[in-house]
Image (cartoon, rainbow, N blue to C red; front, side, top):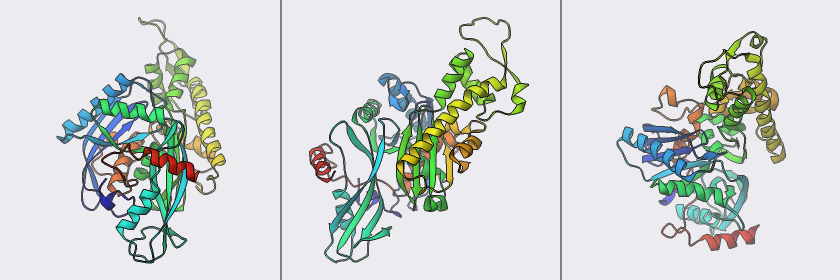
Length: 420
């Protein structure tokens, strides 16, 4: 990481070629973008592939995951006519948990400089926790000068003490290591790892939402990730290990139909809230194991919705419970933005408003140029948000030992033991 561009302060946008990789349970997607000096991003390459080898965001088949990553990245490279080696990648695996770390350093009353920012951020750069967890995502969420909170960029100010609050997301070391192994086998390096809901929020939220308080619910195939933003920053993140694939599997089991047909029925006819018209509407349900056309198997659409609605309610009730337990339910205000592929299910927005008792909208990427209609929907919010993170200069903390990234682990472990 180079200089102030990686300090996480606003207005320090990167420029050049940036690649983002969304490794999900239902699809793997790669966006390659060119970022100009103003921080504006334009997509020049897109590749996506059906995901095989992941469950609940975690790698369960290395070879299948590597093949999907390789295919998606190669497709994006061909379209962009470029080759990428480093990517920003999302994660939702490893039972993520978040908290905030506060750090202060003395600045001796002089004008605060870039060097002071690098110093305080390096002091607060946790890398690993004792045991089986490590820090996967660490982003500054606010500075303090002599105890005064809410400082967005302290450079040029005077004071004797400079502090920073860093939002940290930890996850299981094993799950993150398996993800890194897949990237390495695909000849890629992870420039940064970011929790999916945070990345999605950067691409779908407007400034007022981020400032006043909003909850982002990213409903993916294998998991649903949660992020609470206020005062322009992330303050809470969590994951519910249920998603759209669980709805599909319920349909397949409940109607004894192949998974592929269950997914198709969910997309074409599924709804999260039943209506009276569903009783009279009939749909054809192919049966598992039938190789020849047999007697048509027609069922009312209401039967399909009776399978979908309980699972959708369960997911949203888990989200509500996590928010209440976190203490951020009130801070997040009454605004919820749903995104992710599973959020596109008919009636999901209305059901979320009912279960969560909040105002709900569907979020699509709005801060990236060059997205086609097919790749501009909620399913691609995370990949677009990874690019926003880099382009807006929101990158995480400076690396104190870039040339030997593993050497600092012992020191950081000691730092964490002393401070927690």
